[in-house]
Length: 309
Length: 218
Image 1 (cartoon, chains in turn green, orange):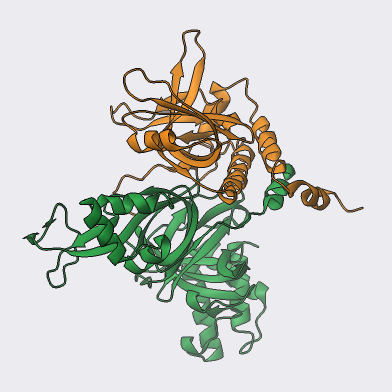
Image 2 (cartoon, helix red, strand yellow):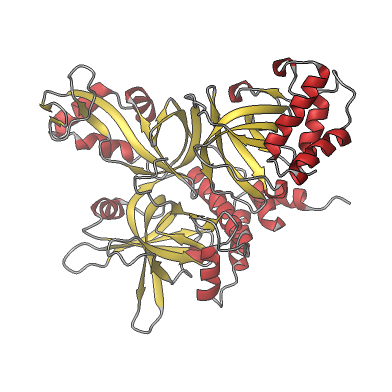
């Protein structure tokens, strides 16, 4: 189905309750504008819709949007639903397979969801950071996680306004390949509203201060394709390492050195696999919840895939 | 992810059989501090690797200073790691460990040419830690998957146009596979897919069930 035919089908559907219109009638009007008068397709659609609105004596907002409904990403809870979205492209990733034209994250006020556009759909490319109205995308579900798929009938229009992307939790997994400096037992600046981590007893804003002890771990998770920097706060660090703040202070006191804490902690972390989830802040995932991936793995699926190519 | 901060290099997953064949290394800029990459024969650049295997031997081969060599075995071959005074934590781990033990290694690929002109590939570890069998198994499956994905994408020709983000351009041009095809004429990437299959089959219990599922139903 060409893009023009898609629009024609959608418009015919929109007016099906109000007027006796056929797809070919709509298509002909669109073609006249697009082919003869060189009107851009989006503008042609608008014009044709206006003509039909006049004929049906309707206001624009009385019109349904056809089959699919404008939906927030966070409200997606069912597989194979046709929906419309108003979203910003929050992230584009490297497609893992040649059949995939684009893959990444779409965001709106409710959060973000993964999207996939297939090569065969021949859609215009989405740009990172740009906001779009997408109509006719299909929801998809895999192991309880929802995503959306763009398809041949999807229409993409750039928005002038910028869609706000809400905070939401992401989930990442991989081997923990590095524990970065500033991990373990640290001191923070005690000044009001300043939680900067002290370097040699100094705050970069307030100078020499009596710091307050805290625990955290800044780590890198790596799955062989992407790296994610993650931060465990005091609570998750205690849960992760089994060492609480009091014990950590005691260890540092005994050794006359705070670095013994991170050295003790990292031996049980480096080289192990984890899945963590939490909101993204800058380049970090702030860990709310984590799981140590130490259960058995499924070699059969990998074996079948390896033999299939 | 922030576009400004230099991106940390991904730790690539490759079995020893492939890693030890990766004799070609290169840089992508003339800058003295530009990262060095080892070219994997399945068509990927590796500035860092992560692997899990069994430490079977360790030896201090240094003269005045400690210089530890470890042999770490995976289902396809042996990784060699070398740690000296500039890798104090890894060196001390090797000193203290009693083989055999499952270990996880994060490190940088290194190549050196021997007197007879052959090239040896080894790892300079950033960290060595003791892990368990479950972690080893997870690494084998993950590494098999990554290897098979690279082999599957090896012949992606695409076109060179479009902006490159990582190893493949959006148009599907697989730059490092083309480089590997050029540099390693004698190495058929499919041998590493076969090695991955062997590695998966070596995992206990994997074979019987998978055989059953893989059989076409009559």
